[in-house]
Image 1 (tube, one colour):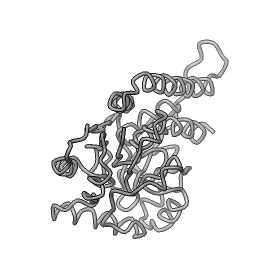
Image 2 (cartoon, rainbow, N blue to C red; image 1 turned 90 degrees about the vertical axis):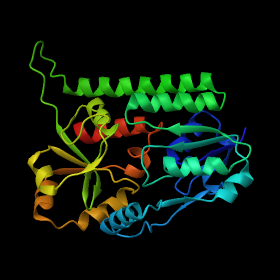
Image 3 (tube, helix red, strand yellow; image 1 turned 45 degrees about the vertical axis):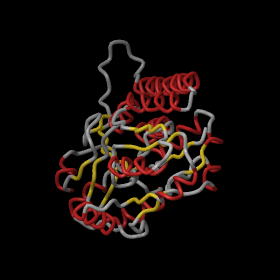
Length: 293
């Protein structure tokens, strides 16, 4: 079975199912596990990722206004790779091939591959996507086993967070949960949504910026400062921690600096919070350490 993945989360799901050897093509952003880095890249982006955040945001907005996809597919290469299964997504048109572009690609392929479209906005939906991929790859048992293991780890995270808050005094009033704000972009500021509030709750915090399943959205610095979080977690979409430090250093707004004078922690958003796949569980474990210390 030959599989082409159009986004990193799908690639990581396939690998976690023990089927990395079936991948014959991946997106330009797929970098985990390391062995996929040598595979043919079937997509590329029109936007220079080295640009500052504001310039990237502007370029994305311009592409949307022009009706142009920021991510392009090498149709000829995909056809040459002859995939039996093609995995795409319909959550975000910014970082990966969108639903419309995916439909146009499939229409050109003969024979038509089995198309799996990931559409997760919550943790339960991530597990549903894992089962969908498992079914397409005829790895249903492996998908069930993977889900069970990931859910077990999430329960461990929740138990650890609860244990760290236990005062040891019977009938004592529960401790206040730390107020947590997770930012996935800084210029303009975007609050992380989708599955991130669930991860924060599992890690023992209270997400004050978003609710489970809500899309990530831009909010002004003044509004974010008024939320008075105890911890600000900088988890930038598509960027690692080093790049996040650079982006944070470029923020000059007074309201932003007041907010960021609070306790600020960093997580590799590119690897752990932006990809709806198995490493979201790693993200929950990391958030527990960052939020509760």
